[in-house]
Amino acid sequence: MNRLKNKTAIVTGGAQGIGAATALRLAAEGATVAILDLNAERAAATAAEISSDAAVGAAGGSAVSAACDVTSEDQVAEVFGQIFADHGRIDILVNNAGITRDNMLFKMDRPDWDSVLATNLTSAYLCAKAAQKFMVQARYGKIVSLSSRSALGNRGQANYAAAKAGIQGLTATLALELGPFNINVNAVAPGYIATAMTAATAGRVGSTPEEHQKSVAERTPLGRVGEPEEVAAAIAFFASDDSSYVSGQTLYINGGAR
Ligand code: NDP
Image (cartoon, rainbow, N blue to C red; front, side, top):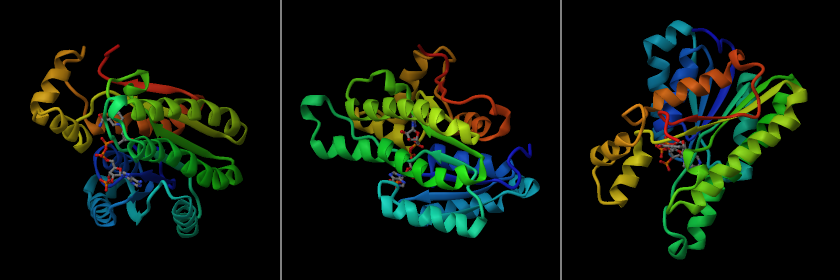
């Protein structure tokens, strides 16, 4: 598919997991993708891997990378400005960077509350604000943010659930404000996806990733956990003109679980 030919996309937290799968998918559909991550080396390695991928080559897409802490307003402004200077456009923003710092409320320290809100929610505000400047000028844009099934409530994740529910409110509101400029704003809310993040969760509850995934799979209608590529496919739909009349939505990607 060539849906994103000549488009420039930014994927935050794109060095690994869902972000890396999304960067690969967008590049495979023809986009030039800028991978932003805390870990500059891993981001550069992921970008190099994507650019050398034969499938991506056929569609003409590629990836570049930049170190960026997306909780820093200064870094976001500088990196987004540089990407626009290098590529002349910013068409697509995927707000993917995220962390967990799980604990029951009575044990949840203020730094763990603050860092989860900053990384999962404030970063989306900062990046959307930086990107809309260029998108409004161009009268074109797609913003897709990562919410989570945890937005509906999850024991031990008051900070994360609040941030991911916040993403849904931010998405609905930015769709209203940016719609008149031909900018679509949507969110995806994955359930359990097999990544380093969920492997770390398994470790915290004393399970191996395999045991943890098996117990989640048993209560999921599709009988398995999700893969990063399955989230990337939905993000690519929202990033493309196939979803041109869809805005303000949150799509749950959770194997049918209620
Ligand atoms: P990973 O932990 O595998 O990847 C997250 C990436 O974000 C890492 O590369 C991380 O870098 C980067 N990152 C963290 N903080 C920052 C920051 N301040 N600035 C820039 N980059 C940062 O996570 P997943 O791929 O599993 O998750 C991706 C998104 O999807 C997250 O928003 C997550 O909340 C959401 N999600 C995930 C689900 C799952 O089951 N996996 C379910 C629902 C939602 P580093 O490693 O260096 O910290």
